[in-house]
Length: 138
Image (cartoon, rainbow, N blue to C red; front, side):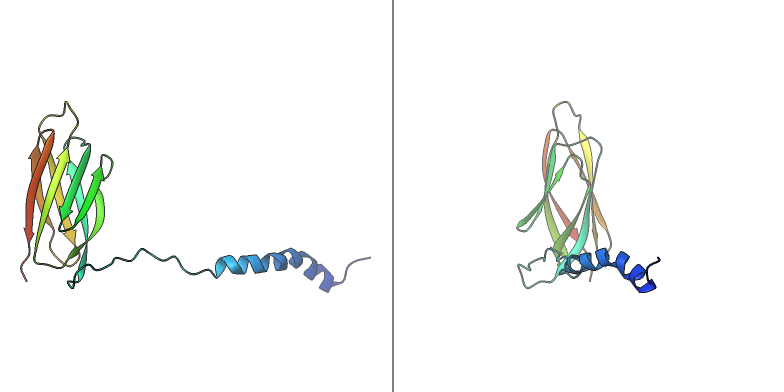
């Protein structure tokens, strides 16, 4: 005897129906919430990429602006950062190289959204701290 077409159709669908409720819970979860950037001042924030290119590998490199510090480790070369939309930004860069590295260069490039890129080359040996000022016209 053969099964009826209705039974032959519903029988394979029974496991799918049993998994339907847990699957619906997984699919209907709240979407992933990105970390929100809190505005610390009344000035709107500007998204920018901060890119580092080094002639020799460094131990650590810190870039500070206002009250924020971004730390680059030896393998990192780019970070997305958020800055005030000021026409003038001042960065303090501190780099540390391992022993045995000759005088070295670091190219720091700031690529803000909607503004021209700015870059500056830093030269140092073992340890370097330098202040950089980037400006834009209105």
